Length: 66
Image 1 (cartoon, rainbow, N blue to C red):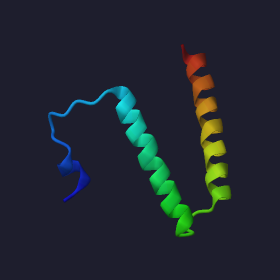
Image 2: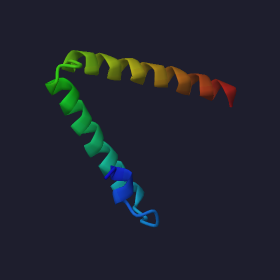
Image 3: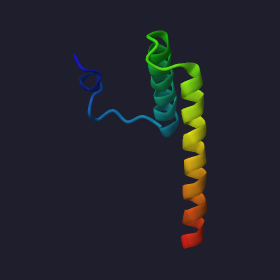
């Protein structure tokens, strides 16, 4: 049974619980990808740094528009 089917449609969770669930899911996926040698820890760190820089640039550009 797919995970989405396990969660009842009317179930309401807090933003904090949703964030916790997302963090756990992300960590599990990262662990699997590294264990299976699909990505390395170095690749992960480089991509995190790249995304942070891109988000900073977007935020700076957004500030210029307002």
